[in-house]
Length: 71
Image (spheres, one colour):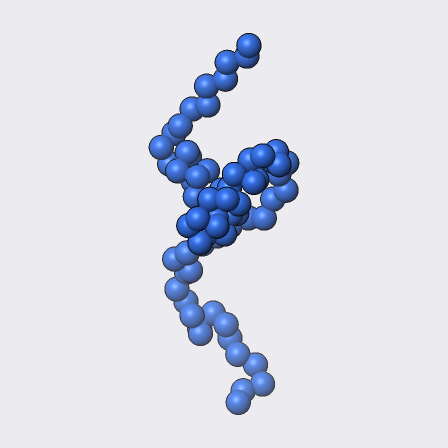
């Protein structure tokens, strides 16, 4: 085994998944909303944070616009 390796020569390819990496954030979400996604989580067997991410990803990919009506 070598004492030192030149990492550049070991894997010159770029990671193809770097665009799909997730970033941890802090966000305030209402309890009712969290409970909604947790219930969906139990029905579908998918972690609730993954469901929230899937929903937000769908909104972003489809350019969904939020319509707010103050009453």
